[in-house]
Length: 437
Image 1: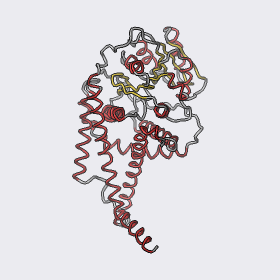
Image 2: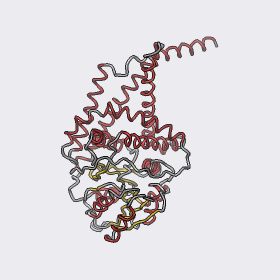
Image 3: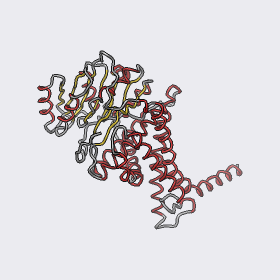
Image 4: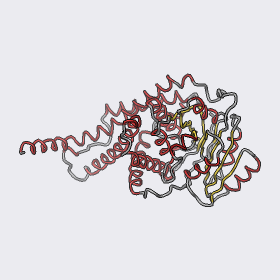
């Protein structure tokens, strides 16, 4: 017994002596490892599928008699944007579609604008909610009213490329086990540093992650701003859940747990508005982090069945990303505490900056990731390499923001009442400038 206690004591001493170095190693090496996975997965996706794909301006190879597609547009306080969105939908090249817009209790002139548009365009039908019911409820109502088996869902401030609906529906027509398709959002708001950094983020981070996840088998989430669904697949899983703060993440997991595939369609271009203030960006990213945590808490007990094994990498990635956020926060705390008190050797964090060698390697891998992604994305938007000087700020600013919002979102998800309905909150739309692809 004494020898056992002695061995435990020695183990704890060794762990304490190495805690600080292990913490810093995880903080510095985890982004390096994930960048490597994203680069290799993204390049594989490009080589295996994307390089053979037509360009977005090419006419999609649709069947001779395309089925009806229902385009669903949930709206909340979109009076400034909904005319442009509906106009882009009416200009779609897909020959057989209807549009169902849901005014979810808007407090601006969205109702009047939608009614005026519906009177002028027979393809548009409008559903009005008296009070804000949330995006999930709006999508459920629109789905009930939809006549088509194939649904294209987009936000009320999005502008679609003329072939976007055709490209979104094509995988659903070609592959009967595809339950959803996620599109390729492009940033319209790029008049500030925050906007320009997000241009690079969506191209070199989010776009590359979608490609890598598709290569490895499962996609963490469809894009909430532009996604297509097979109605029969949604019917099997019970449509959208109204008590999840991010309905897009939840529906993606439930579809894939029901053995439906999700495809990424980079040729389906959608121009979106993003926050250009720190406050707006903070609220958006906290919401994303909270939604991811809610999905994690919902599936953590049931996902370990063998038939769901292909979902395990997504769960592990989320767990490691959250652990990284906590590790970064702890490293900052120990570093700051060490400025005021003498820390034990094992808990001493002398610097929050990576060692010279690893710092150089991390910077090199980040630049390699950015350049790789922008070279892939240049077929969808010209001049992206000009954004590289802005993108290099991403690791410094957005990694810290990601860590802080992950922590805030994690605790908000833990404290949120589970059966509370998730409703709309009007986001920061940024300064609107349209950029041609």
